[in-house]
Every structure is written in C-alpha cells, then in structure tokens.
Image (cartoon, rainbow, N blue to C red):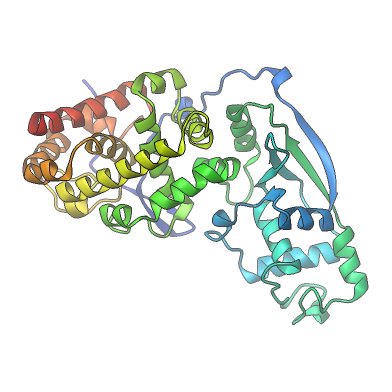
Length: 383
C-alpha cells in the first residue's frame, strides 16, 4: 500500500517571502538524472573582455542580461555601491558565465546582477554612489562625476568569462550552470532556464504568468513572481500541452522535460506563431475553467474535511490546467459543482492520488496517475 502523505501542507519561502506555491517533495535522484556527457560535445572556452567592451555589447544587445529577469531581482543600494567600489579599488571580480547562441549573441547566466549594476551605473539609470567602506569621498557621485582616472579604471577593468559554446546541448548547458550555481542565493531551475532561453519563450511565459486569467485562477498568490514560480507552472502547462506523457517517460526527469519544452517553444520551425496563439488560447481557457470549478481553491489541495486555502500545488496545476483546456467554458460551468465534489473526494479518500500530488511528484508513474484521475473525473461529467 502506498504510504499516506502527511496532511500538513507547507508553503515555499525564499528570503522570508512566501512564494505562493506548496513545497514540492520530488525525488532527488530523479531530479539529478543527467545523461553521461560526451566530452566531444562539451565546449567551454575562456574569454577576456574589458568592462567597456561588455557595456557596449549589452547596449548593442550582443549580450542579453534578461532585463525582464532583472526587474524581479534588484540589488539593494549597498550591494551596488560595494560592487562599484570594488572595481574602483582594482579588486578582481569573480568569473562570469555566458551562454552563447548560434547567432553569436550571448546570455549571462552567472553574473546577471553584477553586469546589470555595472551597466546601470555607466549607461542605464546612472544611480548615485552612497556610503562605502574606503572611497567615501565619492559618495553622491554618478559615473560622470568621477575623475577621469577613476572612469578610465572602470572602463579598463578586465572580466574573465567562461563561454559555453552553442554546439553544447541545452541539457548539458543546464547541468553545467546548475553545478556552478552554488553561491549566495542559488538560482532556481526555472531561473536558470529563463536565463538560458530565448526571448520567444520568455515573452510567452511572461504573457501567460501576468495575464488576468492566471492571476484570477491563482488568486494573485504568484503575482510577486518570487523564484519565477509563476513562470514555472506556466511552462509546465505548455510542456504537458505540447508533449504527451510518453515523451515525459522518455525524458527521465522533470527538468529534462521542461528543457525540451523550452527548446520547442523557442524553435519557430517546430512551433509556429500559429501554434503559440493556440497555446495561449488554451491556457486562458484552462485558467477560466479552473476558476469556474474551484474558485479560490483552484490548483490547491481542498479535501472535504477542510475549507483552508492552501498554496498552489504544482502537480495539481499541471493536471487540471491541461485537462480543462480541452473543454468549452459553458459545458464546464454547467457541471462545475459535480467536478469540484469529485475532485475533493479524490483528495480526501484516494491515497495513491494524494501521493501523486505530494511525494515524488516527478516520477512518471505518479504523473500518469494524477493525469488519469483528473481526466477520468472530467470525462465522466462532460463526456
């Protein structure tokens, strides 16, 4: 018999902020599933750039610092001042990691905050320096207010950059960046995918995660975009909508599956603009239907014994959004009460289903279990 999961639902927190999603108990071995690397396909080379070169390349959009990502994570003033002071003092900066695309443009995966701060100081918002540890005489100055010697020192500062060649497979790139992503506040898997992906998929996920239908269905719980949990669940919908469960089985892990989905969304030859429009339409219909059935409890554990509003459960989001996307709103509304009651009974009495949305949620058997259970409820009521 499957071990019955605990009833305690815990919400994820990051930097003392609630993310709006339930803690997901995945299988660590499955998460770490990485195919053996072929050394011939892994190409990492080291380059040296001056600070002036990098700033010019950012301005010319040859280097992508994912501005939509940076708007979500802004360094505090003291962190920005300390970085600029370190450069002015001639202290070498830690190594940067870039992902190179086939067209020669590069994306910053490790070092986005540092480069954003540097770019803003020189060309962007041009913030003013404040109190620092050694160079307090520069307090109140912008870049233009610095002496020519200090400006020259900044421009000539050398960066060491490890660049991942575009011929390196996306999955291998992801694992490389996950391995090096261990300092300070490590990026979440979705944040890494975001930094490595193209504008096409990033724009799509932003559009879905900031839509009125998504915010209504999730009760605004993910509106703060903490750890990109909102874009992760939107990507999960896209992945399970675009690919079938057999593809998931072959992917071996959720991370690999979501990487494959990201690649598909970014590839116009395999996923056309028409496909994108249809995907967006299906997403909005799924959100509207879920809200019609579950109200404020959409995508959350809601057993018969409780009226507590739990955080969003990723596994429930996957199953219910993908299944409900296939039905017209009028049909769903007409049977909303029956669907909700059946779903609540499932979350109350079915230990296998509870396990499938609570423990080892990336396991392919549990993925199938929850999709089959949800689809069974909807098909029984709607045909």
